[in-house]
Figure 1 (cartoon, rainbow over the protein chains, first blue to last red):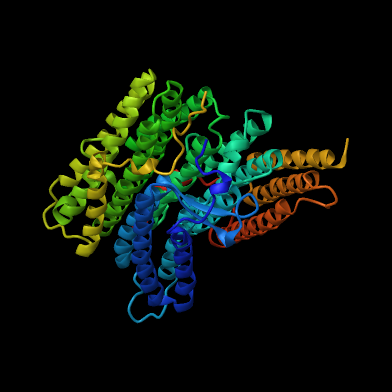
Figure 2 (figure 1 turned 90 degrees about the horizontal axis):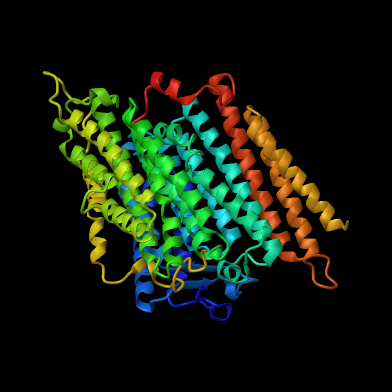
Length: 510
Length: 113
């Protein structure tokens, strides 16, 4: 049962920050369009800095009060009004997204600078405004307390992401973008249908109110199934992953980093919200097992297909398909822990850490692939000779990001998999632990192949196709290091992700 | 059978037809139309729910109606974006099919950095 009863739904200190977290990026979008050209880039970079400060201030407000940060829009309390809420889960994601998008912004200055002598170019203007649009929509996904606002946020996220896919305007990427859009539209309309059914049955779309009113019956089951299926199509969980590799591999490197690292986490986060907060008493252990079985299939299929890719960017995109699988293993584990009367926080924290370490590592790896492409003029995995000579920092960053995906200590991926595997063993679901270990082994194979090929000496007389600015390499390395050192989060004295949450999330799972 | 139930059944039929069309039809434009059919079904259902949930003496529950209008706007912009993409694809590739599978083409095309 969520702690925030309707009577307590009042704006808390720092509540206005939640509004700013959503408004500032969208104000940046409008200002970017008004100023255009180089102005759009300046506005975007200034907004990135301001947004990071806002995210830190929200985290501070959360830590001070030890409870969720709430803002009631217009003073109208739910069910009539709409509330914005940031509990521990939301704040952790807000911080991670602000940090990753900051790194991507620094990197993208080189690729999306307006060329000298031109007042305005299409790709830079679109990229900088859409970067802010993606960010604002993600923030709205994290802080919304209402299922319909979440629907609008998801749609905004989709529109921005689809346009990022087709940024370079080739027919091939337009086709990937269209395929992505059709999957996403089907997903969102199914989600909306579920939300409508919930309103029809319980008369509210506010998450805490709904969690109190919802109980196991056909309407709730149908809504849960429709919403989950729709969100899986948007998250690209196997077998609905077909749109992802061409879309993510075809976009420019900085856009790929946004799409693969951040955008898919938006709809995944919503699945977490629904399963842990809204449908905690409706979902059953077998349904959670089904979700995790799809995740396990994603891990195996994604990794094996990644091993067979000839191009670096497609390899990284298939690796994303596999890593999405890990994100869904937390559901039966949290349910199992709750059923055994144990604290399910371990499994939930494992899932959140996996999301954040994948966001940082995958953004770093896609941007590293972009630098490799700039240097070599191609990204064929079989011919990466000389990369380590020209870009030592980037190869180190790729290896560190890969280590986080594999789960080597002390990376964030290690801590995430450690938490999930120990939860699997505690709840006697050893098969998920087995899948995670095999997945780690397969991941290490392709990361190793890439790093070894990149370390090979260049042929005599070879020179890089184009120089790479040093700050791009530093941005990539910083994100990879962040992912690699995320494991020290284990030393954090406060369980940040669980602040302001129910006593034991998923306690009602049977 | 009362009126809200009739509308609810119509909505279910629309969603079913749209879902079938969206999965089975290979052409993008037909998929977009099928998406709009599903959307109409959802909106019709929402309208029926608004009518059924009305308090005594009121024509309907106002909250679903407000959400409905927002939903229509969102679905409209989604359709506009999708149709614009289809048109661009047609202009550039000469046809607007999703069938030319990406992996085969992707090897021939140089990737972008």
